[in-house]
Length: 153
Image (cartoon, rainbow, N blue to C red; front, side):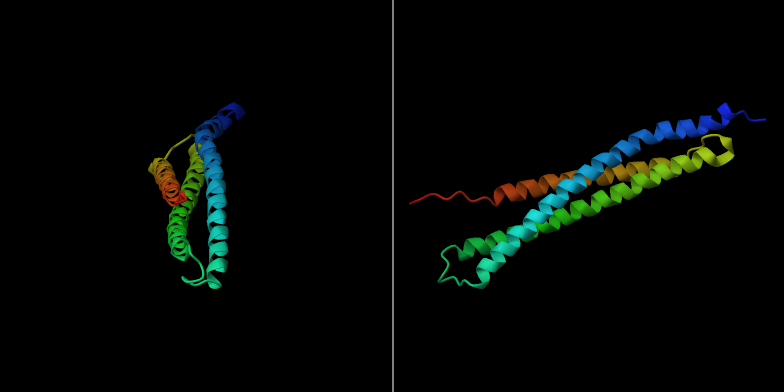
Protein backbone atom coordinates (compact mmCIF):
# COMPACT_ATOMS: atom_id res chain seq x y z
CA UNK A 1 0.00 0.00 0.00
CA UNK A 2 1.23 3.47 -0.92
CA UNK A 3 1.32 6.00 1.87
CA UNK A 4 0.27 9.61 1.27
CA UNK A 5 3.90 10.74 1.67
CA UNK A 6 5.05 8.35 -1.05
CA UNK A 7 2.30 9.43 -3.45
CA UNK A 8 3.27 13.09 -3.05
CA UNK A 9 6.94 12.43 -3.71
CA UNK A 10 6.68 12.29 -7.55
CA UNK A 11 4.46 15.38 -7.55
CA UNK A 12 6.90 17.20 -5.28
CA UNK A 13 9.75 16.26 -7.61
CA UNK A 14 7.78 17.49 -10.62
CA UNK A 15 7.10 20.81 -8.91
CA UNK A 16 10.77 21.19 -8.05
CA UNK A 17 11.78 20.44 -11.63
CA UNK A 18 9.16 22.84 -13.03
CA UNK A 19 10.47 25.85 -11.10
CA UNK A 20 13.25 26.67 -13.60
CA UNK A 21 10.98 26.53 -16.68
CA UNK A 22 8.40 28.69 -14.91
CA UNK A 23 11.05 31.32 -14.15
CA UNK A 24 12.05 31.22 -17.81
CA UNK A 25 8.40 31.86 -18.71
CA UNK A 26 8.51 34.96 -16.52
CA UNK A 27 11.52 36.21 -18.47
CA UNK A 28 9.76 35.46 -21.75
CA UNK A 29 6.76 37.51 -20.61
CA UNK A 30 9.06 40.46 -19.86
CA UNK A 31 10.73 40.18 -23.24
CA UNK A 32 7.36 39.98 -25.02
CA UNK A 33 6.37 43.18 -23.22
CA UNK A 34 9.57 44.92 -24.35
CA UNK A 35 9.09 43.73 -27.94
CA UNK A 36 5.47 44.90 -27.88
CA UNK A 37 6.53 48.37 -26.77
CA UNK A 38 9.18 48.55 -29.50
CA UNK A 39 6.80 47.47 -32.27
CA UNK A 40 4.23 50.01 -31.06
CA UNK A 41 6.83 52.79 -31.27
CA UNK A 42 7.87 51.67 -34.77
CA UNK A 43 4.24 51.66 -35.94
CA UNK A 44 3.51 55.06 -34.39
CA UNK A 45 6.61 56.62 -36.00
CA UNK A 46 5.79 55.01 -39.34
CA UNK A 47 2.26 56.39 -39.30
CA UNK A 48 3.52 59.86 -38.42
CA UNK A 49 6.01 59.78 -41.30
CA UNK A 50 3.40 58.49 -43.75
CA UNK A 51 1.02 61.29 -42.75
CA UNK A 52 3.77 63.81 -43.36
CA UNK A 53 4.78 62.31 -46.70
CA UNK A 54 1.22 62.07 -48.04
CA UNK A 55 1.07 65.87 -48.20
CA UNK A 56 4.66 66.36 -49.34
CA UNK A 57 6.72 66.02 -52.48
CA UNK A 58 10.47 66.03 -52.91
CA UNK A 59 10.18 69.66 -54.01
CA UNK A 60 8.10 70.87 -51.03
CA UNK A 61 9.80 68.85 -48.28
CA UNK A 62 13.60 69.25 -48.08
CA UNK A 63 13.94 66.09 -45.96
CA UNK A 64 11.72 63.93 -48.20
CA UNK A 65 14.52 61.48 -49.07
CA UNK A 66 15.53 61.23 -45.42
CA UNK A 67 11.94 60.43 -44.41
CA UNK A 68 11.73 57.73 -47.09
CA UNK A 69 14.97 56.19 -45.84
CA UNK A 70 13.61 56.25 -42.29
CA UNK A 71 10.43 54.49 -43.45
CA UNK A 72 12.57 51.75 -45.01
CA UNK A 73 14.51 51.42 -41.76
CA UNK A 74 11.26 51.21 -39.79
CA UNK A 75 10.05 48.44 -42.12
CA UNK A 76 13.26 46.50 -41.52
CA UNK A 77 12.92 46.98 -37.75
CA UNK A 78 9.28 45.85 -37.87
CA UNK A 79 10.28 42.60 -39.58
CA UNK A 80 13.05 41.92 -37.07
CA UNK A 81 10.76 42.61 -34.10
CA UNK A 82 8.05 40.37 -35.55
CA UNK A 83 10.60 37.58 -35.96
CA UNK A 84 11.80 38.00 -32.38
CA UNK A 85 8.21 38.02 -31.13
CA UNK A 86 7.40 34.83 -33.03
CA UNK A 87 10.46 33.13 -31.52
CA UNK A 88 9.49 34.32 -28.02
CA UNK A 89 5.97 32.94 -28.43
CA UNK A 90 7.42 29.66 -29.70
CA UNK A 91 9.68 29.61 -26.65
CA UNK A 92 6.70 30.15 -24.34
CA UNK A 93 4.77 27.30 -25.99
CA UNK A 94 7.74 24.92 -25.75
CA UNK A 95 8.45 25.79 -22.13
CA UNK A 96 4.76 25.44 -21.29
CA UNK A 97 4.84 21.99 -22.90
CA UNK A 98 7.87 21.14 -20.78
CA UNK A 99 5.98 21.99 -17.59
CA UNK A 100 2.97 19.94 -18.72
CA UNK A 101 5.26 17.00 -19.54
CA UNK A 102 6.86 17.21 -16.11
CA UNK A 103 3.50 16.99 -14.36
CA UNK A 104 2.27 14.29 -16.72
CA UNK A 105 5.37 12.20 -16.02
CA UNK A 106 4.78 12.55 -12.26
CA UNK A 107 1.40 10.84 -12.58
CA UNK A 108 2.73 7.80 -14.41
CA UNK A 109 3.14 4.69 -12.23
CA UNK A 110 3.42 6.77 -9.06
CA UNK A 111 7.01 7.77 -9.78
CA UNK A 112 8.65 10.46 -11.85
CA UNK A 113 9.61 9.12 -15.28
CA UNK A 114 10.98 11.81 -17.54
CA UNK A 115 10.65 11.23 -21.24
CA UNK A 116 13.03 12.46 -23.92
CA UNK A 117 10.44 15.10 -24.81
CA UNK A 118 11.07 17.01 -21.57
CA UNK A 119 14.67 17.67 -22.54
CA UNK A 120 13.77 18.24 -26.19
CA UNK A 121 11.08 20.84 -25.58
CA UNK A 122 13.14 22.59 -22.90
CA UNK A 123 16.25 22.82 -25.10
CA UNK A 124 14.24 23.96 -28.12
CA UNK A 125 12.57 26.57 -25.91
CA UNK A 126 15.95 27.82 -24.69
CA UNK A 127 17.21 27.91 -28.28
CA UNK A 128 14.18 29.96 -29.34
CA UNK A 129 14.77 32.33 -26.43
CA UNK A 130 18.42 32.82 -27.40
CA UNK A 131 17.55 33.39 -31.07
CA UNK A 132 14.88 35.93 -30.11
CA UNK A 133 17.35 37.78 -27.88
CA UNK A 134 19.85 37.92 -30.77
CA UNK A 135 17.15 39.39 -33.04
CA UNK A 136 16.28 41.90 -30.31
CA UNK A 137 19.92 42.99 -30.22
CA UNK A 138 20.01 43.25 -34.03
CA UNK A 139 16.90 45.44 -33.95
CA UNK A 140 18.55 47.73 -31.40
CA UNK A 141 21.61 48.04 -33.66
CA UNK A 142 19.39 48.82 -36.69
CA UNK A 143 17.51 51.44 -34.66
CA UNK A 144 20.81 53.00 -33.50
CA UNK A 145 22.18 53.20 -37.04
CA UNK A 146 19.03 54.93 -38.26
CA UNK A 147 19.71 57.95 -36.07
CA UNK A 148 21.07 60.77 -38.14
CA UNK A 149 22.82 63.60 -36.38
CA UNK A 150 22.12 66.92 -38.05
CA UNK A 151 24.99 69.32 -38.46
CA UNK A 152 24.34 72.89 -39.44
CA UNK A 153 26.51 74.03 -42.36
